[in-house]
Image (tube, rainbow, N blue to C red):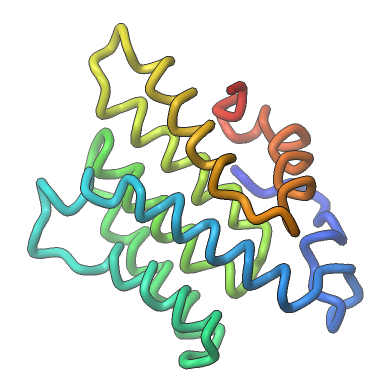
Length: 171
C-alpha cells in the first residue's frame, strides 16, 4: 500500500476541496513520468514486445498537454500495472513505476508510487551487495529532477510516507 489511509489535502486539487493547483498537479505527473522512464529499460529490455509501460508514461505526458482525458491516462496506468503482474524483479517494479505514473492524472499522490517503484527497480537490477547504494543513487537522481515549485511538497511527502513505501526514500 503506497497511499496513506487519509488523503493529504495538498495532493487533492482545488476543484475537489484540496490545495493542489493544476500546474503543480501537472508538475507531479511529469516528475513521476521522469522517474518511471529512468528505469523503463529494465522492463523493455527483457520484454521488448510489451508497450504497456511506455504507453502509460506517454499517456501521462499527453494528459499534461491536454491531449488525453484523465481516464485515458489512468487506464493506461492500469494496463502497465497489468504488465507487471506476471513479472519478477526489476522488470516488475519498472512496469509498476510506469503504471503509477499513468495514475497520477487521477490521484496526484501516485507520484510517490512511481518514484518508489523506480527505486525498487534500480535496487533489484543491481548486484545484491550493491542494491542499497543503487537505490540511494536512484533516489538522489529523482530528487535532482524535482522542479523547485513542487520540491518541498514531494520531499515532505517522502518523509511522511517513507514507511509505507518500503523505506526507499532514505537517501
